[in-house]
Image (cartoon, rainbow, N blue to C red; front, side):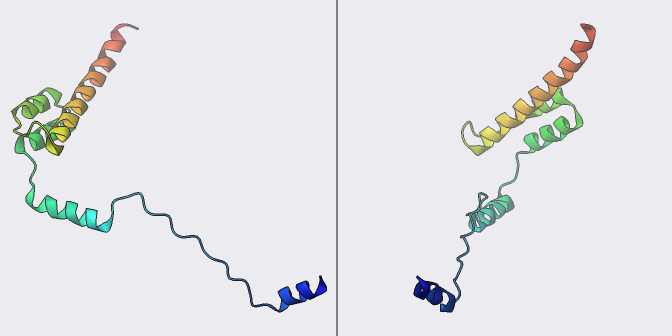
Length: 106
């Protein structure tokens, strides 16, 4: 037993391994570069951009009219983005109406 303790004391220092860094959950450098390159040649549809500006200013009806004029494919990321914009505008309109309507019932 004493020999084992003496051997442990005279041995080289113990190397402590650091755990590997966890892989990042975000997009990789290649994905970010590809997205940046796409933004150079993919321009937003003008009616969608106008609708987004109107929605940000609070003109929900005007935004929905602009979204209706937008020419985007029926399927794909642009269609999904347009549906998201429409839903956001409708949600904003319903929350505005709910705020005004609720005061009449109290």
